[in-house]
Image (cartoon, rainbow over all chains, first blue to last red; front, side, top):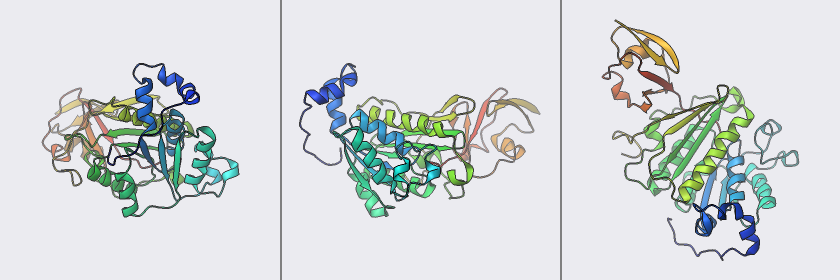
Length: 255
Length: 67
């Protein structure tokens, strides 16, 4: 959406077969699938959320995925980070996930940014992708990702999970009255526990990550007409709750 | 005065002036929380000015960063 790109060649019979369960749905059809195939999605973080996000988006036929992560795969990740295996212990997570995706769908072009991105690189990537999916594990990154998404009017699909609690929010920053991440959480000092200290229930990241992938498809297909509420999920209670959001006139990022 | 609210899904007796600020003091809520009243997140400036009624649903949310 931010830069003009040459359209990819139309789907051949093998691809029509691959995506047939999408094509059967009148809400998607060939035109919707071509839209997905000509989209670029940036996934920030290749951990518990990034794995299901990348696997579902790659399988669903997003044309180009960029996966950014500077971490290496550790054995304690394998309880929930389903895009990595024992064979990839010690490997960079973005590269490991790219390998997994290349075995799943060669129609999806995957780029790995196997490093911690500086601000200039992150801003450049956000400017050249259609949607950003925040799967990161710290507030500093979340704040930066949000700032650049606001600046470039790039839709942001934000997910987070810790212990047995998950949160999901979609910020379609192309819309004039869209709230941003900082409208929801004005105070983002870095004192929260990470998964290393607090723990996280394995399948919970699958729930939140799958919903991030789903909302990304919804954004790309133009299915989101109204601002989405913030969704919270309590894994032990099996309960979802939703909270209406508003753009804040005093937001330090998007006012 | 005392009113009964629904705080994070459970009944809660609020004593004193029925404002969000009172509730936050009474529950010793600290940190980077945000407050939702009947399903809508409120700006911080409303904590002192918004009066609560019996059976209002209050949720206190915290940002989480785990990925």
